Length: 117
Ligand SMILES: [Zn+2]
Image 1 (tube, rainbow, N blue to C red):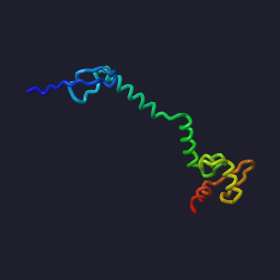
Image 2 (cartoon, helix red, strand yellow; image 1 turned 180 degrees about the vertical axis):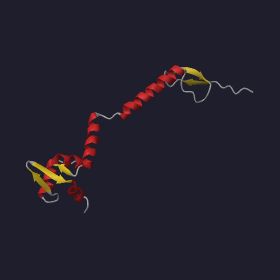
Image 3 (cartoon, rainbow, N blue to C red; image 1 turned 135 degrees about the horizontal axis):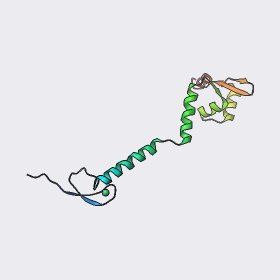
């Protein structure tokens, strides 16, 4: 008894019709299978690489998470708020900040306090 099957399939890579020996065959030959595999790997790699902006954001966030004291710019980034908003929060006493020369330093716990109540 022969279990030989022949199915006409369309190659997933070049679009050519071919006779497949098994139902799972997707490509007309090794060349197309290899090429398709390579391309898939390439796209996977491309998708994994983030844009420099995204990478920078990741880097900044991990840095900020380890910081105990934040600048106004850090706080803006962390909260996604504008400098004005931060200054307003400081003025109204919601955030206590310390002036160090020309720099305003905010303790991270001060920001966490905002979410505590
Ligand atoms: Zn093909």
